[in-house]
Length: 369
Image: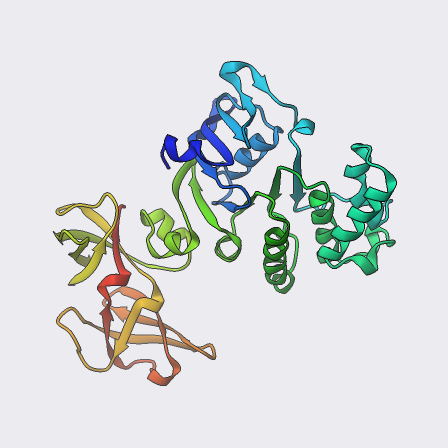
């Protein structure tokens, strides 16, 4: 994203640098998002995503750069600007829920409005409306200790949004929930965010959460931004091997780019042990003819047949077949390399049989290593 692109955004993070001692946690990153959008910072532990979130919240002081929201500068060290966290008008939802156990749900949710000294009738109306939004009306007078984990997280969300803040920040909010509840809460959080329309930034290491919930994803590594874009773009057109490997499952092979055409298609040679094949593909950003690259193929884009249907088909042996209802998860050996393949149950693949793998050039991508 260029400086010009960022300057038109509701949230603007420009050239953010943050050190902890001699360690650079965030390395000169810039990004922006539109008002009302849902942005996810995605990456493994230590990639800088939480540090970035806490810098936006004002819980970390940055070394250089600037953060601006809706035309208001939150922090800019070069101009000696630092707006305290309590003046940034931000709602936060943590993985630990952080609701007060000695208070009722209503008292927890009302607290931010009481701090702002709103009159009681307005507080009552807004709390009731917010509890209805998060489906906690029936729990209004219960203490936090009487709520389930999912209910506590919804109470935490209600408290964060009741004052209609400028920004809503999520720090791994679902990581303490079991898998089934976590999957349900992903959809619920996104629904609520859509209804209230608060600009939101969500931090997670869970790729599924990012793909399900986000309008835009920023993939981070070692304090840097590897790629940003809409979920479908990040998944289908990763910039490099790191992004391809981190988002979803991919077959990744070292490749030599043999041909690049004006329309962005091309061919690569892949080699693994004694096996060699020349395959059609799309050529990713920053990859040129003659380059060493990585071939990235999603399992659902590997086609199987018992006959060789094209010159670029390669022969393999079915090693594993796992029936999962609407699809079959397969492993197919090509020499020493094991292809991950998603096949249809009607293919009736059997372990040990010879098959051919075919690759659709539109969904086979050569990316930077």
